[in-house]
Length: 494
Image 1 (cartoon, helix red, strand yellow):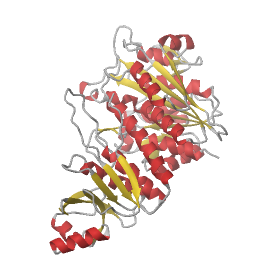
Image 2: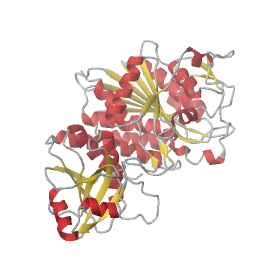
Image 3: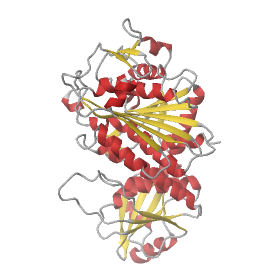
Image 4: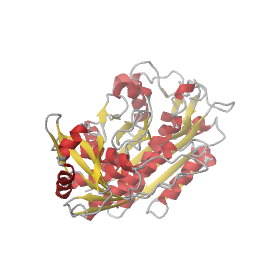
């Protein structure tokens, strides 16, 4: 497993006199474009080239479109990277995206060691966005190879008048947590399977004030975790349940997080088409987000109690695999008529949610790459939020907005729960062609104590990027929801 090593990053009051690359913003529109560069850089370009940076940028086809990057010929071997910000009064989300795009463009440049980031960062939230965007944009998954490429370490300086050192450190912690989640999602399933994933979680949390307990197949059988044993029963790599507990003194509230961790999803006996299977190593992105966010919450020292569950299994077909129409007994005793073995994630989550309800928290949030229906509804960049409480939904959506992640509330109600009625068990695990994401959410809600507030994040739309890199979002695992989960915990502090 590749270690996550962040580049050096410090805040400076002014751009250093010597730097290999300067990253600066381009704002405005095609008729009126402004380059926001350090004064010394602007004057140097006019002296050397006899034209302004804006004029030079225009000849190179530079546009102020958000995230568009243009490399401008440099001064004395120094290069200038202009990145579009659109508005001259950008949001933190826009700044994060621009910083990510620019940082990605710098990685791999020859003879570059020092980079000055001169994007808008003179407010705390903007500084946080620049730091997160820079670190997230810098990431690239290192292939498994006999001859790994040695990438030179970069040293970033972020120009800002905000002197609060904690902002930079907190942004670094959150960004690193998201990168850990990305790395896990990107790992091939022969390297990341339930046992090794549980071990990776233990290694990550070692030294934190987090108690970690790993239930193996024996513990899961004796404990009655029927969802895990059904889903994982077709694989020789048997399931695990990772329970993490962070309980700081004077905690103001208790948050339970539950993450779906299907390390590879073939669909089981309801086998997926071959072209739909190649990215199914990413079906553990919910557990990755939950575990990484728990580590970040502990490292940040947030005053909120967190109990987290990583529900880990591999869904494969074999003579020991579970079947459509099997009746399964979930943790706590509720029975489920299984309707499709490719709807397996909700079964391991049911175990985790039922067990998490016993902790009697103030709020339970589960995270899962759960349904293709959510992707049909929302596309590939926005994750779905479900809750039967308007107040809880607003808390989650507000946390996502503060974190700079895009989320949208989707509906659920009696109509979606009706599809779960069964004649042979307490309920079915799904059913009906329409509203699949909502039906899945209603299934999950049935395993949470009705007195406990609950939200479900369906990150299937945004957990794995099969398209082009965009801003701070790379190709492959995105680590989506980590920042939102940290913000939910932050919002629960007194």
